[in-house]
Length: 190
Image 1 (cartoon, rainbow, N blue to C red):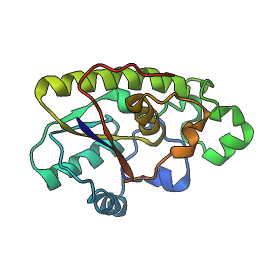
Image 2: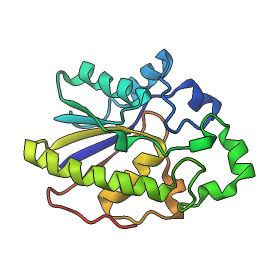
Image 3: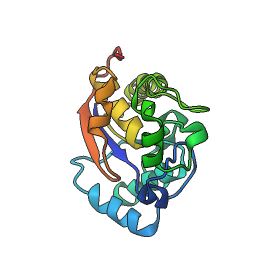
Image 4: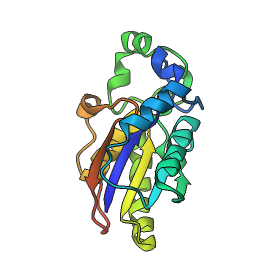
């Protein structure tokens, strides 16, 4: 199964470097144009699009219908960004300076999630996605998600442990990567 994992179009909060987490912001028109251009070189069209249920991902996922026609789009809350809890809306630089522990994968944000929490929900999604796609005969899959979530998903799909190096591979809006996933159950590693 060919899987392209794509980061949603930018929002004003992305531009301001505010922590969005589960806040339901939406992309602006210029960001959607950029997203359209940045995703044109994905070398295959999808049989299905899985997407986070947050507006910035939903709107981005819907754009693929313009390019590829009527393909199923399935929204799944497990593809959401890391829940930033009490820190949603705050500026990322401020949080990194005052709370450097936020960059530890085991640190749970007050009222939110740790990266390891994201790993748990993304692992369940990945198993369900592989099983359901295999059952439906979908061999080309697009997944529209968020910065931290998509890196955790990459590691789950490739069997790479989720550790402090997770911060080294974060991608920008409209960036994507492709992985080949077998149709047999896999074991994610932490």
